[in-house]
Length: 349
Image (tube, rainbow, N blue to C red; front, side):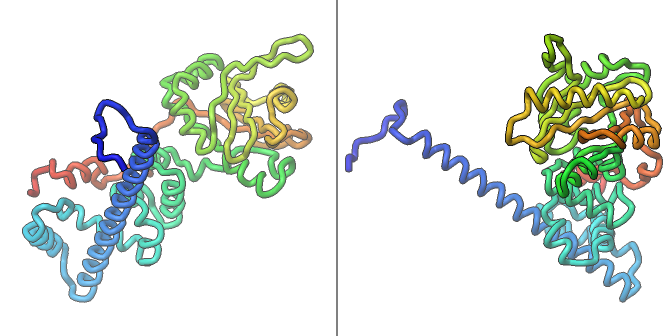
């Protein structure tokens, strides 16, 4: 083996691959360490909250004990953030909301503490909290994305579109397809008024395609806008074309600025046939159509889908949507909690 020094300006054979492998392993180790620290922190906070609940119940301690506990813990651990009275109250609320330790250890510990605050702050009960927690874990949502989906009522909208998937797609493909569509879709991020026309909406959706994909949900990949298809020497243009990675099929989206009419499905069905014959690969599943309209009569939509042989869904879109009053809270905002945990609030230090 040669003892000649390695030049810092020249790269030995295989060095780049080795460095890339090392970077990947170091990054994975850092991620595991971060997850481990977060897990221990969430479990610690739950245990502290459980102890506060138990002692207040058994010994009749009042709310003042939390102020004293906060002072004593910060004196004992001055380098640690998070022991303010407000955050201790959240620990108590956290333990009260999730009395089963197994749920905290196996599921919730996968989410950072700020996610826990969002679930506590903005949702009323355990079932909805479980659903949003599971979705956040599955899709890797940030805290901000989690809050956005809660405020937009994702749970209530998911799987709510009028479709014929049960009759036109095999199970469980039909279940996944149905859950992949919402009703209504929220396009308030476009900044358009209710008077916007189809082309305006379409152009704005492409300009804001990242937000559009987020609203469509996990699995959608953008293919194109005004996609040209030539049929019988005539040109036809699809409003929007997507591919769904989990369903393994193309999704044709047509926009209508007015109320749904049964004849709209005839045009959508024609586009689906063209995509299946000209674009779809032999390994892809049959394409799905989604008609987005400003409003619809649900009974009319169900009747219109009744005799259609292709899988289609009909949903409304909303250009302007305000936060529902019942989701507003008088509790401190998550931003306030963040500032406090980061030590920037200052008032209680």
